[in-house]
Length: 367
Length: 80
Image (cartoon, rainbow over all chains, first blue to last red):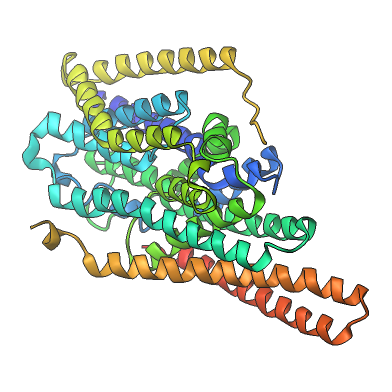
């Protein structure tokens, strides 16, 4: 009975994480298109929501590999999964509060790693897997996107720089619709599946599914796709504002260069079998498209805050995941701990959202 | 030790294919826009030959851009 209650709490928490993932990462795929007026804010977010939903159904390969390679999967219990999710949600909400684009995937893996360390010690963590699949891509992806976007904007200015701005702007805005669509679809195939993988892991840990022939149940796919699409539709306007207007004041060609560079780097990485964070790639591309035009055009202070948030994501989410696991264990091995922590989390989330709504209008600002 | 852990081949492949793909997208979309803009200007100036050449350039650019998007969709669908 107690195990089933914990499982229900874990599934609900996973869907809350999926929702925060949606509204937190919406910015990645639509911020530049909104800021260059390629598409109005609400249709942009609606398009991203629909394509995230569709993307979640395209492939289930990511869902079946979540956590594998980062931690010893035999160390995973429903309480560990719960603690990892709460750690990731906490970090997502903190970075959203300050309008900082950070990786939800890194937060999720960081939270799980921290909870596993608290439960089983450092021996249960696969350091090589974290280095090769998480840290190296995080370090390499933004500079590559920066360089690609920089080269792209220089080529664009060279070819169309002397043309009348009207038709050129229309052409690049149309191109941004295509790259936004691709990014949204790609995001759906990645991020919704991480939640599916976490829920499926919890079902296996609880004995509801067999560990052999690991498969994701249909209701898990539908619930996860719906949660991320709803979160995307709600939209993370604060992060959209940061990416769209605060790093650089971008023109329509820079918006195109940044988004095209982001999409090509992510897809090239998919082709090479290398996992990248959409957040890191798009942020690096925006900085590159600004710096190639004029180095001083990039607000390096804002860029520095974003990079600091990236560096802190893994350890901060891990510390929170470990702390939640320890706090849960204070109440024993039953469902009381997760129940108390879930209620505390919901109250805190409500307070944070209400405070933010009172402080500022949620509508995005376009230049 | 770190080098043994990192998949260097995939990293190098990702780096050069990102640069090539990014440059290709920038070039084909810019050529499509250049072709469309210049062809309408040439038509207004009654220079049929130049207008046809720019229209052809625009068509090639658009076709290549669409091909890149379709290839991108295929990559998304086969993501591992």
